[in-house]
Structures are given as structure tokens and as C-alpha cells.
Image 1 (cartoon, rainbow over the protein chains, first blue to last red):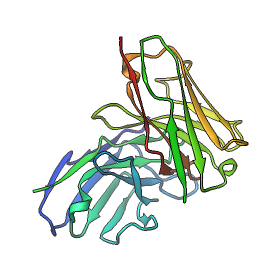
Image 2: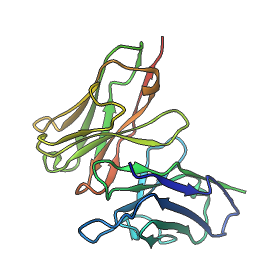
Image 3: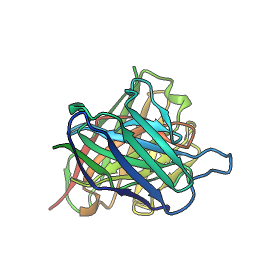
Length: 113
Length: 118
């Protein structure tokens, strides 16, 4: 299975400040079709996961533009330009390149300082 | 609006069985592959099983292979997970999640809690 490693695991951020989460994969996530199937999910306290980003940098409908994804190969980043209170929760990266053996990162807990 | 509603979770003894269901609405269920993903208490997300839109292609995580069976009823817009020989380590919230072209999942249900304990 492809191991997904996130850092940091805990991220205290001041309201209005930027935040950045790293996700590294054990193998390249470039699919044979040329696409890179790296996704980001947000899980707010007590809620189910919600997809924010697919194929590295594509925001889902309704996702605020303060969220952005970038990266390539084995190295990916989720950035929040200005953290708001509603952004508190756990963020997961997930690879879909090696379907059906999809794997998730361990999660990064974002909290407000 | 896409809705996925899981049910069937409960407390069960080790070695017991349980059948989870997921009722889908707001989209053409028969056109989408589906997945089960679980989350142990306080832990991360683990993919469990996949079923294609027609039900002909099925995959399982090694941790549940031989014990869990995924199925679907397109006429009733429902997804199921039959879980046998349950172990304490199967304790988790189980989510059904809609597949998007076998590269991602987009919509998730609210989850149903399975607790395996004597």
C-alpha cells in the first residue's frame, strides 16, 4: 500500500493567519493516464469528512477560495490563506492513484491558538 | 441534494455479525460506484470496500477480506455491508462514500457506529 505521511500532526494557528499542511507519498502519485489523484478532506468536530480538493489543486464546489492545493509527484501541500474559526478540524490527504487501494494520511489537527 | 444515510450499527460481541445499510438519494445511484470507509474512535480514515455501479466489480481491504461482503440494490438505491466474524479492532464509525471515477470519493454519509465488545 502507498503510505501517505502528513506533517505537522497538530497545527495551532492564530485567526487570520495562514496555515500549511504537507503530505508526502511513498510512491509517485502520477497515474498512467497522466493525472495525479491527490485529494484533501476536512473533518470538522463531530462531522463526516468533506472533500475540499481533488486532483491536487481543484477546489470542490462551495469550498472557499482561501483553500488551495499544490504539489506534484510525491510532495503535496494544502494551504489556507487566512484561517477562520470554522476551519477547525482534522485535515486528511488521500491518494486515489493506486485505486482500489486508496490510502489516507494520518490527519492534521488544526486548532485556533 | 446528494444524501447518504447509514444505518445498522450497534454493539455486537466478538465473533458476531452485523449488516450495515446506506440509503442513497439525490443522484442516480445506479450510475455510481460506492465505497465503505471506517474510522476507529479517535483515529484516521481506513478504506474498507468498493463496489462498482453494476455490482460486478468488488474489492476489499486485506483487514476485512473473507469476513465482510459488500453488495448493492440499485432498484432500492441502497448499499450494504455484511460483516461476519467481527473483532474488537473492527470497532469504528462506518461511512458510505460515493466514488468518482475510481480516483476519489466526494460525498459521505454521517456514519454509523459499530462497537465490538463483550
